Image (cartoon, rainbow, N blue to C red; front, side):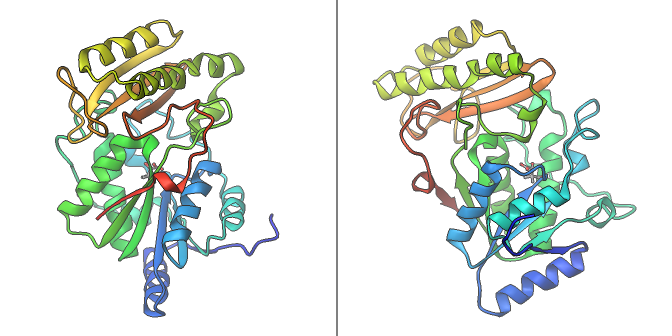
Length: 308
Ligand code: PAF
C-alpha cells in the first residue's frame, strides 16, 4: 500500500461507463491508459502523460485472451491487482476498470476488428491473430469509455499504428497520444515480460538496444541509404546470441519493408523482434525521431506526439 488514495475499481462495463460519463458531465477531461496489468514504471509514465493531458486518469487492467496465440504466455502472464492498484495510486490514478473476461467477451460474442495491412508485416506473421485481438479489445474499451485521450507507448509501435488506424476508421471519439519508449537503466525497453529473463538472457537481450543505438547514431551522423542501414542492422544483430525473428527497416506510413532509396527523418524505423531463451522481446527506433537507446540525454514528454 502507498500513502496515496487508492483508485476506485469498477468491475462491469455499466459501472465503468457511468463513472466515465460522470467525469465528463462534471466538465473534466478523461485520460485513459489501457493495460494488461503487471504495471511498472513505463506504465506510470503513460499515466503521468495522461494526467498532463486531462483532469482525471483511468487505467484499464485486463489480460486480453484474444491477443495471445496458442502456446503464448496467457496463463503465466503476471496478474497482481493489489500491486497494480498501488502503482496506480502512486501515479494519482482515480479510476481503474478491471473487468472479468465475460464482461468484455459476453457469451456468444462473434465480432473481431481486423486492421488489414498494418497488422500484416513485422510481428504479424509471428503472432497470427494478435493484432485482431488488440484492435478488438481496444475498440471495446474505447466504446465503453467514450470520449477521452488515450495514451500508448511507442515500444509497441505496430500496435500503436493499428490502434490509430482502427480509431480513425471506426470514427471513435478518442484522441491518441504517443509516448516515447521507456527504458530500464541498462537500455532494455521496459516490459512486463522482462521479469521472465534470467541474468544471462538479459545480458544477451541488451544486443537489441545496442543495435538500435548504432542505427540511430549512424542515421544522426548522416547515413540515409536504406540498403546500408538495413545491412548495418542485420550485421549488428548477426553478432547477438539471440534467436532473431526479424530485424527490419520498415516505413512508418504502412510498416512495409523500406528496401531501397533515401530514408527521410521520421519515414522509417528499425524494428526488432527476438527471443532471449523463451522470452520474446520487441523494440524499435524511429530514425530521425528517437534517440539512441543508450543515449544518456533525458527523454520525456517533449517527444510526445498526438494523433486524432
Ligand atoms: O499493450 C498492451 O498493454 C495491450 O496490448 C493493450 C493495448 C492494453 C490491449 O490489450
